[in-house]
Structure formats: structure tokens, C-alpha cells
Amino acid sequence: MRRAALSIAFVIVLAGLLWRDSHAQSDASIVRGAHRFAKVADGIYYATASGTMTVGANSPIILTANEALIVDSSITPASGRALSDDLKAITDKPIRSVVDSHYHYDHSFGNQVFDRDAQVIGHQNTLVRMPGSMEQFTYLSSVRPVPDRVASLKDRIARETDPAQKAALEQQVANSLAYLQQVKETRVTVPSLTFTDSITIGRGGREMQIKYLGRGHTDTDVVVFLPKERIVATGDLMESVISYMGDSYPEDWIATLERLKALDFDTVMPGHGVVFQGKNKITVFQQYLRDVIAQVGALRKQGVSAEDAAARVDVTKYSAEFPQIRSVGIDVAAARRIYRLAQDPNSGPTP
Image (tube, rainbow, N blue to C red):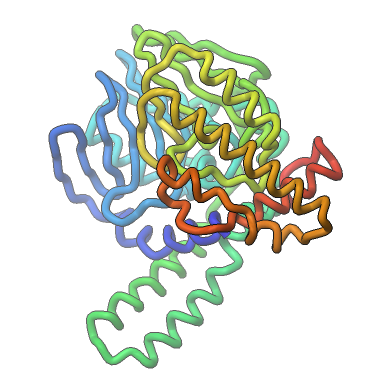
């Protein structure tokens, strides 16, 4: 599954990168420790994992005259601490606000690092969903495969004759075990400030509008809109890659994205992927959703299982905009979700 695969990749590289304190600078970005900070506009940065570490939410950083606001606190307390420390590469301002774009673990399990000194802001539904998030499929699929992966890696190590390859595999084992230790440290930390429709923060010359536009990737998604800068941070409501659909509301998602497009922005900072310009990618993703809904719905009516339906859905025509689509088939979690919503349109997250 997408989340499981991403989390396993995260395990491979997290431990070594979190404690590295190297610095490098290019024309538009600064690298420190585990993060690269790409400058999007004056005082606005897009934090991603540096090197090969690509898992966990990307975190938009918004600086005001006196403080910093972070969108999404990262995937574990350890990575949240790394983000807090690495942020010193671009500012010495204190972190006073953290926005949860939604409740999923890879965006919010660093909250406990920030909640003592910063206000954690999220939608009212996040306050409801987050306490049970460690018991849900989306999170468990990131943790449960790790022991089997470690066993498989150890088996490969025993058979490996190349010293360099063996060392690389041993590092993967160490990183995987480190991730399991980091999981044990996690204390689910809910937002201290919630809202239902929108909230505007005006600090240090910046106006930041935090908006709930409707159900989409989850029923907790919010965006952070900077009207003056014409920039929006979208979390997983809109990514530059295909978003995970296992807890989604696909029909509503299309309408919610239409409301997103009604905002006056040029630049999108997504929860995963890369910063992109304009609204065309959003329109294409709406078309993708319509196509997935139609194909899965038709196969369901034919009595095909969700698993078989997922394997048969053909969305390869969208590969020009979303290159990770390489063959016929979609994430089985997406098909299962559509099947489940057919029975209960208001179904909560996948248990």
C-alpha cells in the first residue's frame, strides 16, 4: 500500500539523516540536517527531507516579523525535533503556530514537540479524528510491516557477499529498528485551537487565512491561504502526486477542489511532492477522481471485488501530469474506500 511503502522508505533513511548536521546552500534552497528549505517567496519556505529522505509530510514555513508558523509537524516526534532544529538555518524566530493540515500521522505526530511553546491549530474534525488515529489502518499499515521487513533484511544480509551492500542492508535494519523506537515515543497531541469554517491570523505584516473548504482527502483537510502573496498550502487535499484515497470522500473532493480553485493564488505548496504553479494540475486531478469513481463504481455493480477492481482501473491517460502512474491499476485502498462509501456515504476513516 502507498502509505506502507512510503513509511518503509522513511524507515530506511530517517535515523541517519535526523542527526546529521551538515549545511549546504544552493541558489534557492538551504540544507541543514534532515531538511532542505526551498525559498518560495520572501519569508516563505518549503521544507522537505534532504538527501534520499522523501517520506513524511513536507512542511511549508511562513515567517512573520516576530515568529514562525509551520504547516504540519512531521511524522514522528524525532522528525519534528529535527525540523525545529533545522529551521535555525533560515530563522532565529520562535515557532509560535503549527497548523495541522489534517489528522493523518505523517503530518501531525510531531505535534508534541511544539505544543508547549506553540499553538497547534486544526479543524474541529481533527480534534475528533486524531485521538483514534493510532488504531486506524492508515497508521497501522506504516508500522506493522516493519518487523517482517527487518527479518527479510537480515535474511538478505546472511546471504550477501558484497561488503558494501551488506553494510547498506545493515544500516536499513538499524534505521527500521530506530523507527519502531520513535513510534513508541509518540503521544498523540490534538490541536489546542480549532475552528469549523475559517480563521484568519494577522501577524507581523502577514495575513494567513486557514480555511476548511469541505471533505476531500479526509473530512479534516484545511488549507493555509496567503492572499497578498497569492500562495496556498494545501496539505494532502491537493498534492503534486496522486493523493492517498483510503480515508477520502471522492465525490465531495471534486467539489472541494473547485472551491480551492476559486481562491486567488498562483503557487501551491502541497503536503507531498513539489511546489507547483497554477490550477491546471488541480483540474486534471478532479478529472482523475471522476474517472476512478466511474470505473470502480461500474466494476462494483458487476460484482467484482474491490481488490480485483483496483487492479483493473485504467488511469494511465493521466500519467503526463502524474508520472508515478506507470501501468493499469490503482491503490487498493482507494477502491475499498469507494466500495465502503457506497454502503455508507458518511463513513469515517478506514478502521
